[in-house]
Image (cartoon, rainbow, N blue to C red; front, side, top):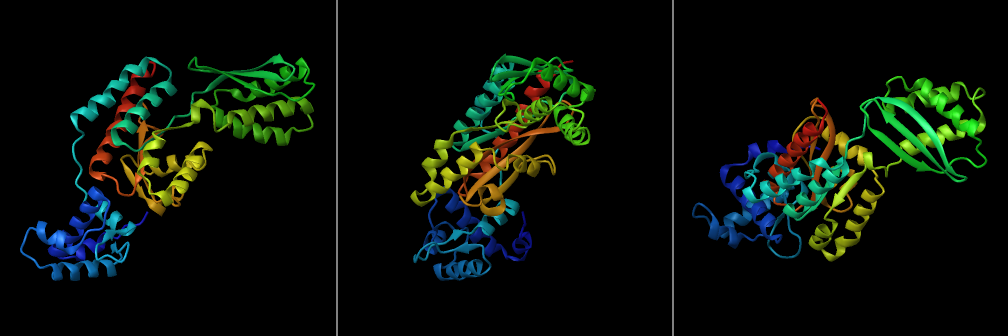
Length: 355
């Protein structure tokens, strides 16, 4: 994400004022802004011809563009980035918005996914955009793993964590699997649990399977590998991306953009680049804004992502929350709302943490 902030420093006050007013008018109306409109609202007496010349200079700098034959201008992606980096004034979170988000704390007694889903719905409703919440992985150390046969073609892997959390996941075992293979697979895994988290255990097991391939029964090895694939399932509740308010983005899109927006949500449903979304937030705390092609996930749709990490009681970044909307977003309102939501989730998680 690059910034052309030096351009702002090189502008005189008049050019900066014209640029700011064009962007603010575009964000409010979505339409191109003409010189006559600016003349009426300008803080000093200035002719339409002078404003047209300034707008042409800004267009030459790549900050404005003419969408059609009309004389009106709209900001380019570079112009929006410059405005966000250098001229954006954020508003305090409105009392009504804050109360609607705070009301989700009543879901704090329910399971984590339900709680985060409640926050996502409130955020989508408030911003009239699509919300995304990247739920944290359960990274507590493991205590024990067990396989349980349910039927000929269904089995259960039971994961017991050191913090008392238990997860049961159903999967299809290898055909003709005898009980002895299940015991062997469980014994093999438990020999390496030793307080490791799931992600740490995955790395160790891959290495051990390669090193001890001849020692492990073929069916037991297949069972272990299927279990590993299950842990990495992108659709599992513990790592899923919760998306709410998709219709809001579809409603705001132009007709020619609708298919691209649908493609975006198809990608989100398939969990593509979710890790990237989180990694983008791990470079530091605070809200980050990705406009259009600045984020590969949204480059085809021209959408904007306003995202912030949230942290647990140990001050460690474990997830992200954000809003997807058109590039013509009310940044001054949305940015503090996303920031407040991230802090709210952090407080809710801290309240849930065992003493």
